Length: 437
Image (cartoon, rainbow, N blue to C red; front, side):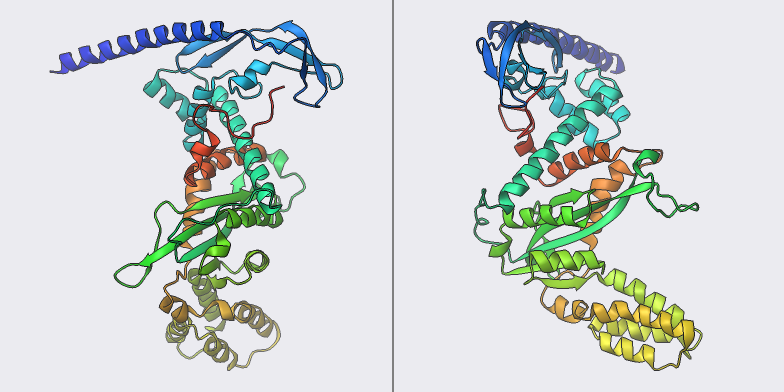
């Protein structure tokens, strides 16, 4: 039995190789029949808009899912900006400067976004019989990610400026739209953190923060009355450029999702001021909820601070946790202030209680639960783990910020269910891609 299985495997490999070779020959013949894309003696420059002049033919060999093929390409040169281009590259959907076909570029984008570039090379070889170096996959996947970022930025700007007006969400509109945001550090090369303070022993930084937002909907409760995230409803926005850049992308995504049409918008965060500032600016009518798990961590810290003076510290903490679950933050503050403290201890107490005082209206947990709302930020924590940590924070990784952003852009596109918009049918070049130069 083992021998027959092995023999069939040999046959499969041989047939795949033969079919691939025949397919490559047929593809080459079709491309040869299409000509070189000559647009006449002059063509509009794709870089500066001037007039570029025909400068002869420049063939180019590209790798496809079937093997290498050679393209005949008319070449144009612009004297104004001193740049050249081949109109046929754009016509065929080739990435700028790339040596991979659109179909193979999409495969490398997906593989490179999901696993390390070395592992992606192994997967492509084992599953598709395509041999590419990890470096080639890295360059191609990051180029696709850069195109995805450019497309996202262009779409976001158009939505914010109302030059694109998204359609209202399909009926029936889900009951609630949630917006959660958070951040994490991505390990980067030393050159990317020069001059930046950090948490290392010498005060330097080894990471750059990426901020991520997750939007999703809830339409129903489970049998225990707890909210259930609608399957496939999550979309993501991210930025390495700080809270204001993320806010612009979140605003566009909120409008694209039809946020103004939902009965209830809920913003959940860990208590960071930038999250509430963004929420207040973008969707001021939303219900704001401080993640209960972060609130409990702060309460444990508060109890530890007072442990030397409370008569029964474990019971004191248990009572306060019960009050927190009930949303009775006033009781927590009152119980904490009944003990006389002075000096540094008093100052520290004021600081710790300030967290609860600032977020009091965001901690009415019993009421939020009664309304069928999530009270924890597990969605964004899970999103950060799935989008960023699992790909960009593995042992030994040190990214350039641009490289990390390119790969995270692909992962966001895929996790948001918008991959096919990046690779539209019949034209597998990332949408809104700049012209090749």
